[in-house]
Image (cartoon, rainbow, N blue to C red; front, side, top):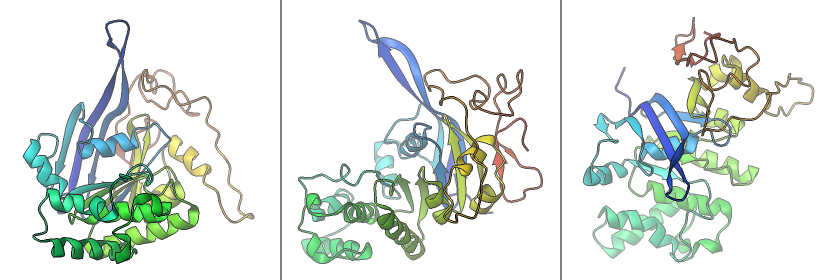
Length: 327
């Protein structure tokens, strides 16, 4: 097998919580707690889980938009976590992000041309004004917008058009990896489908690799080659999309999939109702983080020992689960 494009090894991010008169550290939010995975060139890895499980924090730590507490991230064999300022700027050309909110991620005081062209200027990718304008027009047309949009401001566009501008901005530096951080969750369902189709077309055209963060499992199933399920800062299951959706192994994955709506009213699915609320990442449970809500948890095992990701027996395509009682 060829070397992975991206490798994440035991990534950890804890946010200090300060309180009292002297603002001393009184606790830590364990947002990401030992996440490890690999991403091959041209692949799409979907990352799903409840709000607050650490999906977006993982993506931002990979890009060093947030400094990780510990762990190692390598891109094409180069260390991202150990990179200096200049090395990180060079790596930024290969790794880009599309943000969740198309209304907040675009500067309202900048024209579309300035928003998309900012990266061209920073990385000195064009040599003249004519070349700069031609590249902006090319990027706009690539994402389904027109040349006359370049002089307009973000408030003049719909949500779907704004997200297309965000995609064009990410494409400006010819990246190899794009992290889509809930890139369609703020859009109407009909617009979601258009943006998903655009992302797939761009992947085929430019050979892009995606890390697709979302909470909508139907969308993730459509676009992803593999899917990683996160719960309270940890990956609890990772498998090909086909395997995960047809034969989930982790109790949490089973509960998530049971909640996905089925358009056929004749098809009945047993809904798995989880007991209680998601524990606080300030004070997560010992052992398996999911044991407080799990129907098959065993006392003295699941509440004591942390389960590690391990291969599912009989699966030769990388299906892994972090559960003491499922393999």
